[in-house]
Image (tube, rainbow, N blue to C red):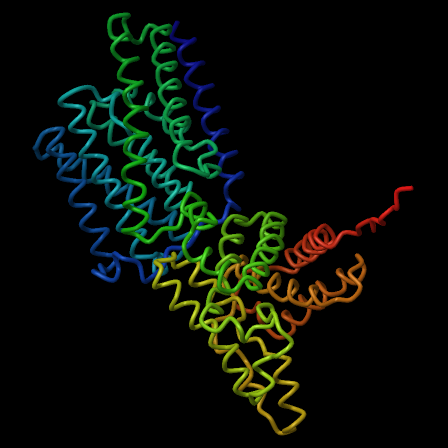
Length: 491
C-alpha cells in the first residue's frame, strides 16, 4: 500500500511539473499590459521598494508566528522559511526583470494580495474550514492584473504557508493547489466578467473531485468527505464573488488595463466613440479600418490584438477639436489649409496628438490608450506640408515638421503607427490590386524603419515581415474586386 501511495505521489508530482511547464511555455509570449507610472495609487503615495519588501516580510512573519504559536524555536523556524522564500523570489524576479525597474504599483499590489489572503485564510481556518478559503480568487486576480508567473509564485508560497499553519499536513494545500491550477487555465482568454462564473464552477468541481480522490485513497473518512465537498463548492463560489467585486476596484486603484476593461473601451456605446462618429465621421471610419489592420497584425505576431484594436479606435480622437482641418472629414472641395501657411498647417496637424491626450484624460480613458495616442506618430515628418513648404524655402529645417512625440515603445504602438499610415495611403490609391497594396505596406514599413521610428521598441525584423504579410492580406480583403451589376431592361 505504501508503494502504491509513493507511486501515486510521484506521478502526481511529475504531472504537476509538466502542467506548469506547459502553461509557462504557452503564456511566456503573452503580452502583459504595462502599469502606468502615473496611476491613481502612485499619485497619492510613492513607497520605496525596499520598504514594501521589509513591511511585507514583517507582517507575514508576525501573522505566521501568531498562528503557529509564539516561541523562540517557532520564531527561528518562521524566520528561516520566510528568508528562503523571499531570497529565491527576489532572485527569480531579478532574473526576469531587474528589481530596480519593478513598478511600484506591482510591488504594492502583490504585497497586499499576500497579506490579505493570509489573513482571510486564518479567519476561515479558525471559524469554518481551511478548505472553504477562496485561494483561487487571489491567484486569478494576480494572473489578470500582473502575470501568470507571479500567480504561480503566489500559489507556491501560499501552499507553503498553509502547510506550515496546518503542522505540515499537505492535504489542504493540495486541494487548494488543484483549485488554483484549474482557475488559471485559459484565464487570459476571458472577455467579460460573466465568464468568471464558469471558472468558479470549474474550481468547485475540481476541488470536490480531488476530495473524492482523497477519500478513495483512504485519506479522508466518509463523514469528513461530505463536509469537505460542500466546503470545496463554497470555495469556488466565494472565489468568483471576490474576483467580481475586487477586480474593478483594483483595476482602478492600481491603474491596470485588463482585457475585460479593453472590451468595455471598444464598445461603440462609449461616449467618446459616439462623439467621434457624429462629429468626425471620416476619422471614425479611418479608425475602424486602422483597427482591422492593427488587430490582425498583432495576432500575426502573437501580441495583444484586443489592445491593438482599442488603441486604433482612440488614436485620432484629438481630431475632434478641429475635424474640418483633416482631409477625411472634408465633405466640400474647399480646404481650410489652402488659406494657411504650410508651417501653420503643420502645427494644426501636430496638435491633434496633444488634444487627443487631453481629451482621453478628460473622459478617463486608460493610460495604456493615452500612451498609444502619444506614440502613434512618433517623431515622423508631416511629409505633405514639409514638401509644400520646401517649395517656398529650400533652407527649411525638417525638424520643424516632425511630431514632437514619443517613439513607439511597444510592439502594439509600432503596429498602430504602421497601420495608421498604411490605411491613409491605400485609401487614395487609384489601383488597389494586391501588388500595389503590398508595395504600399512594404514602403511604409521601410520608411518608418529607416527613419528610426522603431528604435525604442522590441519589434524585430521577423515581426515586421509578418506584419507586412498580415496587412497586405487584410487590405486585399477590404478592397477586394467587385462585380459590376448592369440594369437589364424588361421587355
